Length: 334
Image (tube, rainbow, N blue to C red; front, side):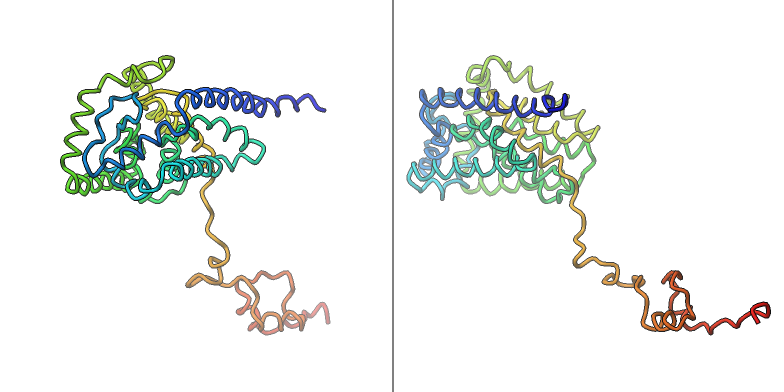
């Protein structure tokens, strides 16, 4: 074993150590609250979306629902499933999302890092969806339309919706337009469908604007402290092209702080992937309109076989060379 082997194993050892700690923490919390503490709130809110009783529980309480009516309206068809089916499907979707996000790191890192996401998987929050939003909108080579996914963050957690500011700082104007327009369209459709629910949500936010500092983990500090730090990280990352700073800033800007928020960092491996190169199958030089062929023509091959054209001659003007008459021997050679 070389001296560099322990250094190479250190990140893996640290990943497994955090996996054990966070998995144990998640199991302790689940023993107290039961599985799907957050996803049950979504399921229950969608059940009551038609009668308007979705904002009656204060943040932090059992089945407290803090997001906009648009979220439950989209979720309503899935919420018609029985609770065990919904909870299992939600957890499996989160597990699949984290596995895909972390897969670029290789199989030996995927297992411990997915275990680090156990608090999010068992509680059933939406941080895994927010990580997918970051990848869709900000990965290298992302299409501007991918920024439309920022509507999900803006209409749920609200304060971590830093995508439009990210695009503005990077002068990605089309992505900025997509992010703003998609959010406005969703809001307009949702308000038309349930204007009373939107009035209830705005009243809910006003009455409980200070409750996030009470509900969240005290070790992470209140939002009034974390939000300026999140904005500083975002501006620095956008101006220096450090894409991992975007999910990091979003985790800091989450209203209710906790370990699960930092599972959004699972998006980082996908953000570090290089831009995909054009496929060679349909993009060869011979297939391009007006492109010059680099392969020798049949007339050149015939000329070369007769010895009139040396084999080392390049093929850029092969046809012209092939039509050139053979050179006569010099007088000295005679």
